[in-house]
Length: 91
Image (cartoon, rainbow, N blue to C red):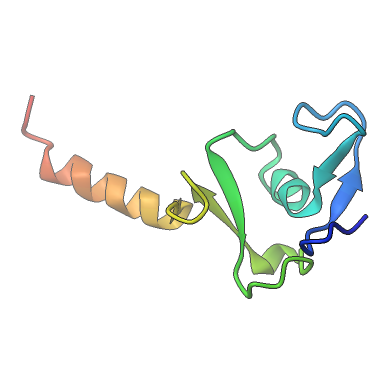
């Protein structure tokens, strides 16, 4: 099912974040299948090419935090490593 804003929904039984009608945004489902788990409420999925119904796994990017202001998981991991290294001697 396609929404008026261009996003695709997929019918899913027993999904914790499904709508009352039993639908979940398809790009979130694709990312969940890739990760092998449900997405956390703080995680969003970004369409790299900006096309909302292009849910090819290679076009999707996992972000942490608010969608518009979130950072990619790759960047978050790099930042975390830098912080850990910077403060490794600090207690």
